[in-house]
Image (tube, rainbow, N blue to C red; front, side):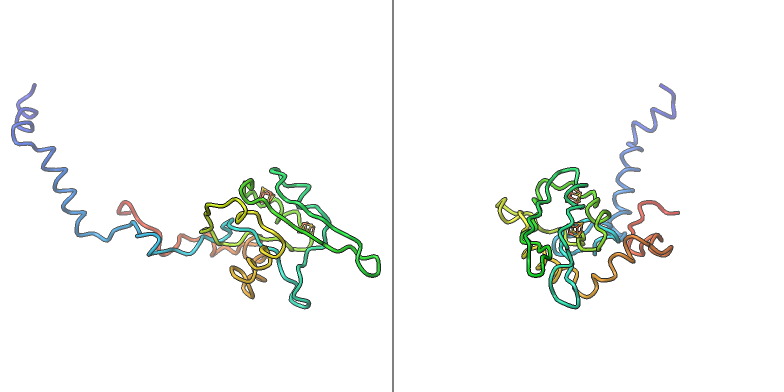
Length: 179
Ligand code: SF4
Ligand code: SF4
């Protein structure tokens, strides 16, 4: 053991350095948040709870029941039931998503030619009941009203055609080291 190492050991130099670092951190702004009291908005393009888009003209679901979303879904968790309506038109009787099996790939959103299904920014939907996480057409339309609404009509512009400033570092981004 060298003299330098001996001095370090005798005077607890490394421990004192660690304590000094801890003390200096006591007076800096914390980067952690007290969730759920403090929340941050979801990042752009966040893939949260599903919703069916309402047609602004009719107030009904935009979905026409083509089934492309169900065909592309890798989890096979979208179920669509159609029937023949007036004038031999196809009517979407039921549109259901088994949320617990979803992997949030957003292929359904990408595949839909009508922009009729979206993944909302809502992420706080854990539950004790499987039934509550089985989304029916009515629930999916309610999700649209609750989590997207009028703003939701810009969803595809924002999410699928992101503008350059959407990729900048968020002002709120915690900094771990001084740059
Ligand atoms: S996000 Fe992916 S896994 Fe989930 S419903 Fe859509 S296609 Fe299926
Ligand atoms: S792809 Fe779009 S329009 Fe076709 S069934 Fe799915 S949500 Fe409806």
